[in-house]
Image 1 (cartoon, helix red, strand yellow):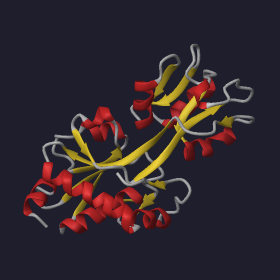
Image 2 (cartoon, rainbow, N blue to C red):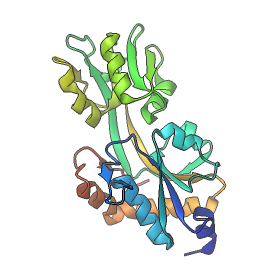
Image 3 (cartoon, rainbow, N blue to C red):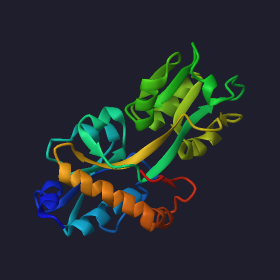
Image 4 (spheres, helix red, strand yellow):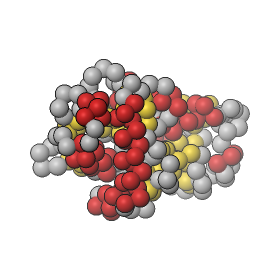
Length: 242
């Protein structure tokens, strides 16, 4: 292992990994010591093992807060959705897992297909600064985005304000649909959230190492084994080669 890589990714002798605690598919519980557990924390542990350093998991309640902390010397790698807005300051690997994002619509909705949602007058409830919100902000042309601080509050606003669609990750929407008798989850996806590993853009050698590590982790079956280990088979997909 090149010492220049270790110096970039673990400058304090420990790999500090920023973990997005709001993604219930990637963080599925806690270890006996209280650390986050799941596919994302285990990826961070595997990276630290390869570097030959200890790992310190640094939890963030929301992905936007994790992204904002780049350069603040609080994390060395961050495990969040790769988005162009975030990539201005963060060098991302190819995705290691993907999660479908789609819409939940209420009973009796005339919206039948993904393409029907982006129409004038349609109001979409969405979690602010989530990876799929960033995608919608770039791509929605006619509908109106109604943002909330969390998925729970977006779901509440969708119901209380009689909004036309609730944007979210398909597994989360499947858990919410029972709250809306007659509601439907639209087939297909408007995007697939690409969960990746990032580091500060100044870490050129570290970023190259992380890219290679993620590609190897997918090819070797490590990512698939972590998905199975944490019981999220069918809800997370191993991303294709980068």
